[in-house]
Length: 298
Image (cartoon, rainbow, N blue to C red):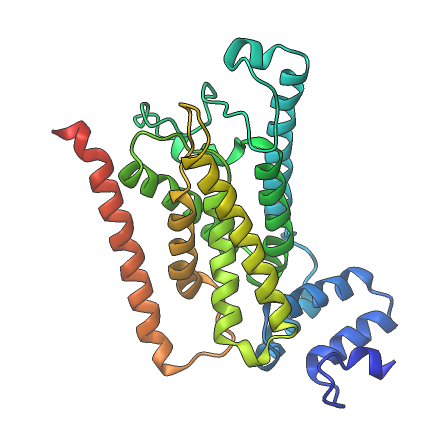
């Protein structure tokens, strides 16, 4: 039994491994699952406090934000897909059919429309609209795999990072890619990816399966970026969709990951990094907002 619990192979049972062992012996399956999820996002040397917290955790509030968002996004997409299948949706709007990378629901009241920026809700609600099977499956899978473990450990802070990534993505698109539509949750997903990647790099030597995680994250980012670039530059259609939101979300994840996520072992130099990240994020938002509203003022 101890051989199965000793995941790092050091022939010692640390606190995190002991918690996992106790949850298994007592048949606390939910607690055991939470410990496994926490191991995915917390380095070995920083597990005493989060694992002590998880021992007292009673799923109140439960880590359901990512699950709810993913369900809404999947439902929104398949509702559109159903309309396309029965020749109503695409007959009225597109004249095409569902594919791996399309169609683009440009007439949706939720999509980010570059010609209706005064409708402020679109800067957030575009995350519920997706383009093609790959788009919705990638975002939902990434949110569930990365978002739920992060939410177990960091709670409401993950919601802040996710929504900040969504907002940062649309603001950057409105400045850099002014005449392009925006759909999907890639801004929020890339904020989660950035936060997780930063944690992985900083604590590389202490993270379990670090190379496997790095490879999986790299494949996810590379494949999604390739599809987005293909849709933006190589698809012959007028309703092209921007990929710039990925960059905006990634920046939000890097900056706010330092500011918002729980720090279980604080070092003196991290105070300067905290302030630098906060100021950088505020400056980024202010610049994007100014350049977004300038055409309406002049």
